[in-house]
Each structure stands twice: as C-alpha cells, then as structure tokens.
Length: 78
Image (cartoon, rainbow, N blue to C red; front, side):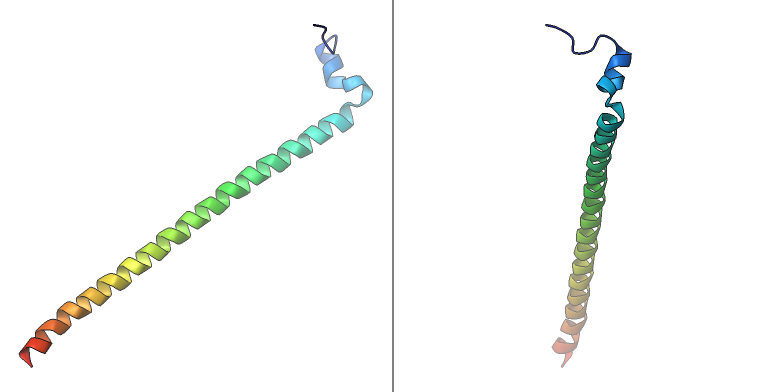
C-alpha cells in the first residue's frame, strides 16, 4: 500500500489546494456542529415544554380534586 502523501506538510498542503480543501472541511464541520447544537437545544426546549404541561395538568387535577372534596361536605349538609 502506497501513502498518498510523502509527509505531514504535504498532507496539509493538499497538493496546492489546501485553502479550498481545509475551508470545505471547516464549513462541513461547523455545519454539523451547528446541527448537533440546534438539535440538543430543541430537545431541551421540547422536554421543558412537556414538563411544564405535565405540571400544569397536575395542578389542574389537584385543583379539581380539592374543589370536589370541599364541595362534598356542603352537599351532604344540605
């Protein structure tokens, strides 16, 4: 198996096209990192929204149950 480049400096020079090659690599990596960061951010927002909705529904249920409990003795006394 033959090596494509004779040295590390030749590898980084990319046969005279280093600027374009490494710019393409950088843009690709930045795009991928941006997508990963955005996905993590959206996931966190979604989980927070689900938690808020669950807490709200739990408070509504507790409120309804406490109203029913407080309404029961009144109905019995009438």
